[in-house]
Length: 121
Image (cartoon, rainbow, N blue to C red; front, side):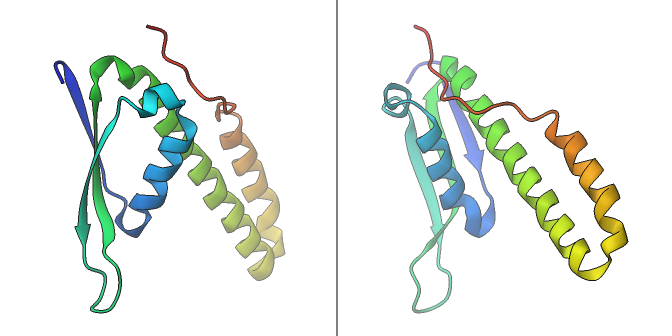
């Protein structure tokens, strides 16, 4: 590919799931233009290899479609983490729930609504 972009993603054992979420969020035409190169590492003796690193290779203009999807997925992950913290706080210290809930609501204000992105050509 000329003017290709390479995006390396490494999230340990969560890499494969994250890559799958990216591909599900993109429209079919964009997915067809993305090459995926995986680097696996063995996860124990009798287990299947785990995708340790994935490299997305695509034409540079597709950055406008792919990067917002990644940003949105990371933001949703942060929100899930906040909800988990609130749940744990409710179990351990009910008084901590209210301030953590306000913090999570504030962070949720910056999240963008989900919509598949289509690249105009």
